[in-house]
Image (spheres, rainbow, N blue to C red):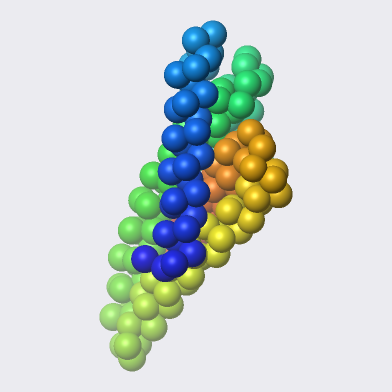
Length: 171
């Protein structure tokens, strides 16, 4: 793991610990209801030819409409982030299989498609973590830093899943 990745994970753990403290201190906070269906409906409506990026954050937005507290916002964003992360992992695994097959069929030296995909994904993870840590830093340590960090992770993860999937590698 890269140093930037470790720093981003440390920042995320600190934000999560802070959120846990807030939740423990705020007995009036109730966990909002999260349902991924609005995002799924949007993706179905967009199909493969539409702008699927419009669908990133739809379910989190519906979830946050009911409760705009900082802990609730973080919860809603994290739930959709978890869904996009699982989708990206599945799409990436399928893309690796397709890239390996293409390398075999094309007798590509050094498995060029597979190694390029792997290297791109590793570089993207480092970039995503650094960018989201920067976005959170713009809040100057305020309570909005947690939701900003998670929202950035959600958006970038969704965009990466769509990018890999649109290129036909993961579908």
